[in-house]
Length: 274
Image: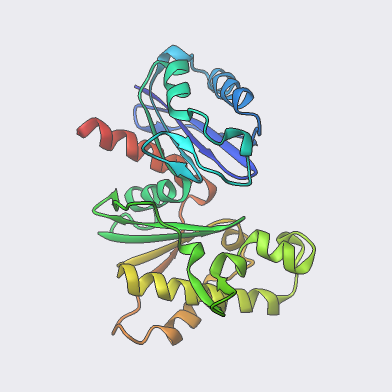
């Protein structure tokens, strides 16, 4: 069986092929802003990976701002020309296979819960800190059902009634670039990142008391590149979380930027069992 797995991010897209449960090395490319060219790119990339479109038995992928029921993207700033386009239907027609779409952070959560840093735990919370802040909770190796998805980055951590302060507005790539007028990767001050770790710990604290997980898995570029240090987040979380006798385990994502690719394979295998 040959499956197509993908993760469409705000700046980069990853596409991989899985054969008989083994995931090959993904091809990474800039996210195409034009919808039709992006679909053509999926087909071309499959061929680059050594498969033909008719060989694909199932497709699974993660995208942000997803309307799962309709299989289209809702309004968002990263690739507006995709908004409202029939992503699921178009991919199904091009590959002649069932297509399973999921929010990108939720799919990454599934990948880590099934195969990665949370695989030995029943209740896994996942948060990613990169361009924005996303996350989800996985229970018994399945993404927990919700009405409108999970948005931990939009939790209010301060501010005023008139101007609330949201986690993503403080701890995210876009937030740092807006505040310091340069990309996050160019910020060298340890004080900046120590303060970021403290604020992120506050958001994780809130997620823990709402979700009560056994483990929290942290992913995303700002953690993977050691800008925000896991040890500093953990220290602040231990200071904050006094309501529980034991702080849940805090793990770095095992698969880094490829967590959603692994989640795509897990999603396909779950759908086949239904």
